[in-house]
Image 1 (spheres, rainbow, N blue to C red):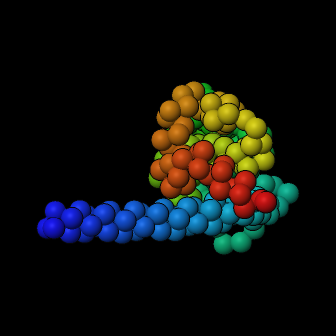
Image 2 (image 1 turned 180 degrees about the vertical axis):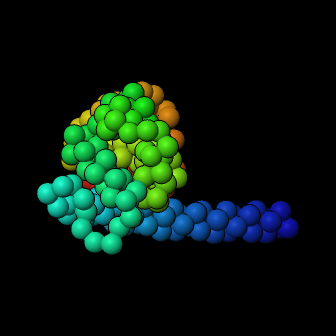
Length: 178
């Protein structure tokens, strides 16, 4: 009789654990869907930046380094230079004919701790838009089209930046579109 009682208690315990697991998974899934929607909306609105005057300087109370960063950023984003896997600090130095320390100062004063992190952020945000706008693309193709040479590294960076894998991000974004 005691064995039956133990088995019954064990079954009840397993059932409760399964219920808790399913509830947590459902809540996490719902949070991921909401997060994907919020990220998609933020990426759409990111294109609105301060306007430049005819000399290319942003209007307002900005330091020279911040204005330089904005001019560099405008060209990088407009021409999607970050999609080139070889794009980095040296390409910026050559393109804008600026000394290394001036370029580094512009990026550090803009709130970016490094040029490579800035470039990676641009690539990841581009990838997120591809996942939303072109869901038929494979993750490998999205990685390649976003300037990453290795899709495994892309997936790792994507998870760190957005808090979910590219696959989960796309699934959540597609569910929210419906």
